[in-house]
Image (cartoon, rainbow, N blue to C red; front, side):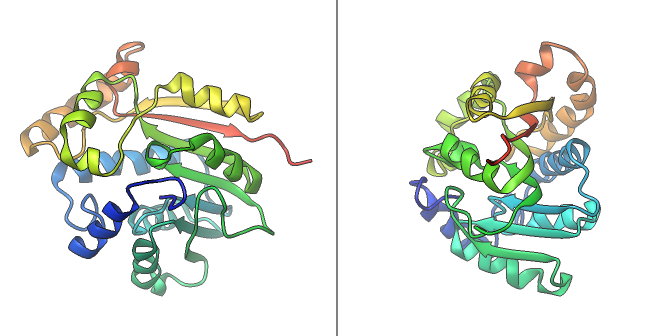
Amino acid sequence: MSDAKVTTSGAFDADVRANAGYRYTTNAPLSSVLANRRLTALTLAMVDLRGRTVIDVGCGDGTYTHDLFVAGAPALMFGVDATKQAAVLAATRYASAGPTLRFAVGDATALPCRSRRFDIAIVRGLLHHLDDAPRALAEIGRIASEVCVIEPNGYNPGLKIIERLSRYHREHGEKSYPARRIRRWIRELGGTIDREEYAGLVPFFCPRSIARALKVAESVVERVPVVRNGACAVFAVRYRPRSPR
């Protein structure tokens, strides 16, 4: 998460200290496990990582970066996060994966890879923590030929209520955006959208019984037009940034 653009970076540092990772990875309840498995599957459905060079912007403690590295078989996976303790933990935890899985500390608005480009940038659950998301997208578009953004679905009324009532969401600066705003940012930056999806139904940190019930209904809801736009947990978009001049 961007130190320059986020006022909640201390909350993420505290998570790493308290849990030896983030709450939704190291000490994840069932709801978080189910939700994140769906996001990983969604990412792999949106972009083909095999043999590609990939940057994961906002990689956190590296858990899902590593999952994509194992399942997607990229030629190189580079995780970047502005929370220093998380990036250092990721580099230590997954050192045995070898030199094609790397981690570094870096601000999403000034990435630590000025002289190279990547085939794909994954931006999973990052923008809603930033104070200047378009600036981050501009920087990400500078270094990637294809971008996959996955964000909490700002059309979901339940999510908007959770953002106001949940202490965790408030402390971590959760502020989901409607899909139309994300589309507008991409188009204003000259990007071309290739694919969109609404997916997932299980919210983070909900009771186990509710998580199980929602998981059963998930695949059905995802297939129903209009309903999925307001009920699904996330909005995903794949696009091609404007080519550098």
